[in-house]
Image (cartoon, rainbow, N blue to C red; front, side, top):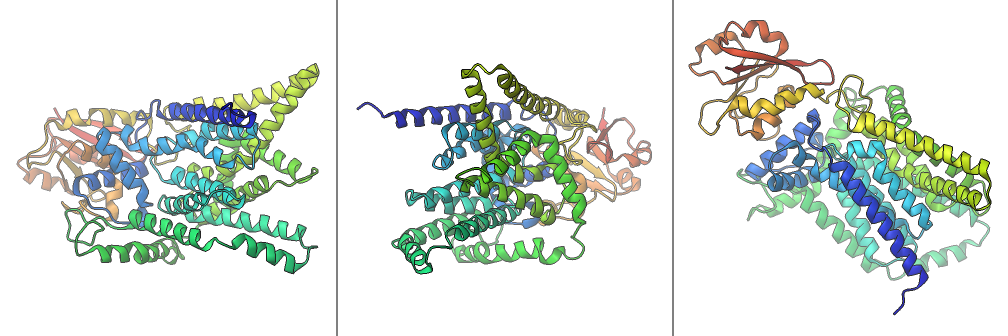
Length: 547
């Protein structure tokens, strides 16, 4: 049977989007393990490795969603503990973002769908944080998927879209605390679009509109119930604790499964509200305008072409005949709500927050980019050289800005001048610590300590970092503890030179804040000292290595 022209066109679009997904994978995997890990990445790596070793996992809102740890544990078990393996899950999900564009085929033209996929594949901010072990890319990717499934469901698509929607929402919620904000912004955008549509149709009798709405709902109770089961089942699987070697409740522990279900369904919600809402006031609040300004600065730096194209497309679409298109309006409202509410509800101001606006902005930006291409093609066919030159200059400027940010930020070594890197990202010189640590430590496996943390700011009692929660001082050991633990090293601590003098066997590696160097040097005779900044600048440590 000869395929129809529509089927051939669909295949071409699908192939183009698939090719862009492969490009997205390539740009995310190249040099994936080169940059030293951020403190947040080190936390994810450490607890994922502990999960792999002990089988113990429990949801802690302060540490992010459980999905990150479940996927990272799998990656570490497959590839071994490394910075590359730590980042593989987020790189794969980020590379899958262009494929989500196919969910929007019913609302976007073919060239718009391809442009949408291209932006998701190559935007510098999405590439940078698609190579960064946090849950934000997971959260925004699954929220976008939920939007796509919802539109397909509204367009009369298969009931399977309801199940896809339920699964996407559950995965988004399990990715990051900010997913609740992202989903809330998307819901707000939906309400605004619905309200506009209701105003347009307000001239029709209310009884007619109610009958139409009831007709659409008829027969949906069973699919809705099944979708709810999909959501609850996936939610329970992701949020249920794993007992592992402990005696706590666990989803796989006979006799304690009901307790694990209670933790997953109810205590997870209470924990989230307690950490993210109740306990944040008043000490956990922050000034709004500086966070909003930082958010806007991120969009200008890493997504200026996307932002400008999106704004232009929204304005043109809204005030031309036949507009506004639902998908363009909803995506723009979603992005606008994200600009307002993400800086409001976040706990830290960081460049990774920009992904929550860039992804929805990519939809109207794709519409604008496709329109620009069509305008240029018509000018080329008409032999209109000035218009062709204008389009070429605009496209060249867009590509140049994107390329400049990508080469200068995504793949360049992190240093004080890095714009996309967060303060807690160690500078490039910290690779010396990472690359030499296993050599410094030497063979491990006996009961003697291999690494000693020195100083009151880093001291925690032996065993206190085996399972969460851990003392706040453990954070001062990041990102070192990820690298230390993956070598299999035994750790210990001390707070005074006298404690070191009393030890018959001081560890071959001693890590301390840099200001302790003068106090330690006389005690550690025969050790060579190395200093490293553990942030983009500052927060220095000294590492004494037995020669």
